[in-house]
Length: 208
Image 1 (cartoon, rainbow, N blue to C red):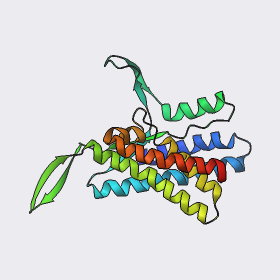
Image 2 (spheres, one colour; image 1 turned 180 degrees about the vertical axis):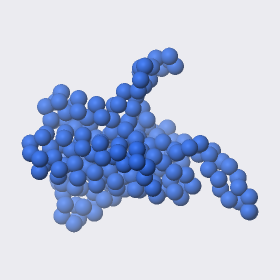
Image 3 (cartoon, rainbow, N blue to C red; image 1 turned 135 degrees about the vertical axis):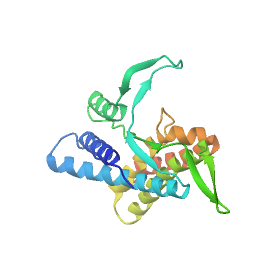
């Protein structure tokens, strides 16, 4: 289910976010924070991979990169900027640890954007729609919210809170992040998920 590149990206992003969350106060806190975010990322990714499987396709997660900086085709950086690695560290340093950006991974459909669906003994090829891609992205967000609810009931408030935080960042409609995939798949669907996530965030901030 996972490629070497994907595993490497997940581990690296978990370490970067672990650095930001722990503020490098101690090795023990760094390890704890990295494992915490690693498990939250895995929940998100496993949910999306399962959904992708049932939609007869495969997805691969990589670090978020940005190359285009304008609306015109020629407005691009010479090489892609590793936003998923740079932005969390930059904002963490800029705010002296007060703010941690957690959206750092994106997913691509592996191979061609076609998959085979067996119909009456024949294979019919159909293109993956934006709605299906948005559905996959939304599954990850909803999985984090569901686990947050269970974690809170079982007495793990910190794990619940950070699952909610991760879900919040993953509904932001920006660049190639999951939130953008959901937003352009179906606006009403994005609004519903965003509302649920923001209610969960409010509850986490005030009560957890």
